[in-house]
Image (cartoon, rainbow, N blue to C red; front, top):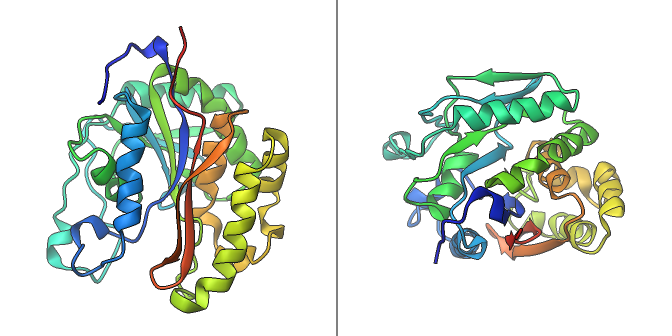
Length: 279
C-alpha cells in the first residue's frame, strides 16, 4: 500500500529498466510476451512503498548536445515509432510535469559544471510512457525527462547522476529507461549468445562489485564480452550510468530478467538501494 511520507523521511532507490518495445502495453494481443516485464514494472511501484514527489526519467530516446530538461507543466506526447496501428498514435499518458523540479535538476547539474538547457515543448517518448503506464497507470505523479548527451560519454553521464543524487532525499524517483540489449538488426534466436554474454557481464558488474569497481567497469563497458553486438549504439545503455551515478555507494540488485525475451534475448533491469526512512 502506498503511503504519503514527507519529503525528508525518504531515501528513494534508483532504477535502470529495460522498457520493452514501442507501445507494447497497448498491443498485448499483437505483441505477446511482455508478461514478466509488465509484472516487474508493477512491482517497482509497490516495492518503493510510497508515492514519489516526482519521477525523473532518462530515456534512451532523447539526446541533445547538452543535458536538457523537460520543463513543461503539461507535457504532450511524442509518438516516436512507426508502422503501428492507428490507435497507438492517440495514446495519452496525462501525468503532469514539474517546472520547479526541472529547475532543481538544472541547478544541480550546473553546480557540477555541466551546461544545461530546458525544453518547454518536448513530449513524453515511448521510453517514458510505455513503462510508466504500467508502473503508475493513474498518471498522478509528476514526470519529467532529462536527455542524454549525444556524445554518450560514460564519465559525463555517471557524473551527472552523482550530481542528481540529492533528489533521492527530496522525493524524486530517478529511472534510467533503456534496454540491457539493443541491437535491432540482431534479435530473436540469433541474439541469444551475444545477449547472454553481455547480460552475464553486466549483472556481475552491477550487482557483484563495490561501487568504485562497478563504476570503473561500467565506464569501460565497451570492453565487455559482446559489448558492441549488444549495443552498436549505446543510447539504450547510457541511462544506466545516470542511475548508477545517482545511486552513489548503494548496492545493485537485478529485479527483472528473462533469458528468451522476444524469441531469444537475455534482458535485465536493476535497482540500486531501497526506500528507507531517514529518521
